[in-house]
Length: 257
Image (cartoon, rainbow, N blue to C red; front, side, top):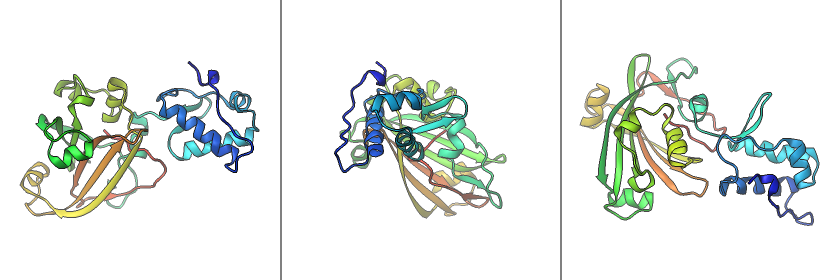
């Protein structure tokens, strides 16, 4: 069913501006999966007819969703629902560049391990699953200029990703969030991060080939869906000797390799 077949509840007597009501109605289409990642939304003329408002009102509503990161405009093609892929990666997630330059490049990624474990109490609470539930614990290394600076630890619930295994994960053709999206119909739309300075333990020191106790940056990130359901817990351990954290907040999304 197309959204042009739906009925929308627009209250012209409400104190809520029309553009905001339309923004909310379009967001609800995303929330209910009536608009899917990568889907072209109706053009401005169609939306004007659908909502019976001016083109300026439509442009404001759609523009806000673009700024929020839910939609993306492609010159000459139209406006699409955001989807996770390599083309969006540098702008939406990878916030590191070599010292002295703000030029961001796609990192080299090296798979380390893929294991099935039992969720700890803290992991279970974050993922809203029972303690002891099966989880996947995955480690990757990320690097720039032929040197690794980052170790990612990824934790996800096995129940959310039936059939996922090491081979599927290692041989994905695109980003991790793209794998979630296209193979498991799980779309990460909101990521929150906490940063803390710590020192490296034995495992991280060995993986990054640095001295035990070296100063590193720890980034805890939670990935959630439109429905505010936590899907992924990710911890990045970053040795910032030669790289800098650079981030402009343009979107609600976080992209991931």
